[in-house]
Length: 382
Ligand SMILES: Cc1ncc(COP(=O)(O)O)c(C=O)c1O
Image (cartoon, rainbow, N blue to C red):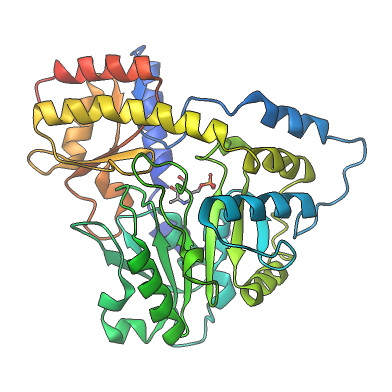
């Protein structure tokens, strides 16, 4: 037998895989399943996006370039200007990526020196699991920052002895799983703090366009020096299977990231970039999706008010982060399976215990299925 990387043994099954397994068991037993587990909504992207992809498939498809086509970088720059009022240079400040997950996974490689004392990568806990995993595989120290209350990570509140060993801090706004949104004051202060400490600050803004109240700010609005943002078409446009996103920000960092990316060969294809041009250039379909997710959330928010459950996630994201009575998220999620309802127990998003006592619902099933799931939930003895 080959000897394996111990990190593979150390990490539990990737959370979405565990939730998928529960769903498969329910389906096998012939149950109607309402799947609020994985953040992959049913609503497809508009057809013009797929058509743009097909039109770009040619007989000869050479290797795609790390920087992607100029057209995709221009479409992204135009989006960032429309959406956040920030002007980016498509030549030097943007790199298209194969979704945002691979960018999250690879970015620690930009700053981690395995032999150095300062190898810290700080990330929100509960949070998206890839922050921890990318840090570990890069040879960094994965340091989970426990969030509670408003679920905002504020770097200046972290112990200075940890900060002195830190090379990268992850922000995630809107936040998965809680839906918390960072205000401009906090973003600016985080940017200034990390510049003062020579720490790379990266804001994962995968859910930036999935909002119901005010449109969330981007870290880019705090000036690009020393920082990067990560964006994606997965949730904005329902393009999870296309694998399309981007990293943008400080030109010096982008140049380094481009060099790094000549190594893994994980570059979006030219036809995916053509679909991305169509998607980033249109905001109408995004508003339609927001409206649908907002309606689904409204149904659940009414229901949770009715049964007295406290909820985060009203402002933004695909998720509702719900405090469960009795505090045992695993037991609560298991009881919901009796009604065919799949949710994620909050603990799977936490390295520490900050996710315990919550469940996460992703607004994935159709509006009709949401109504049926609420009826089934109401009839459960919980
Ligand atoms: C916070 C966050 N970042 C990044 C991603 C990765 O998204 P994708 O790789 O589909 O762009 C996800 C997916 O759920 C997420 O929740």
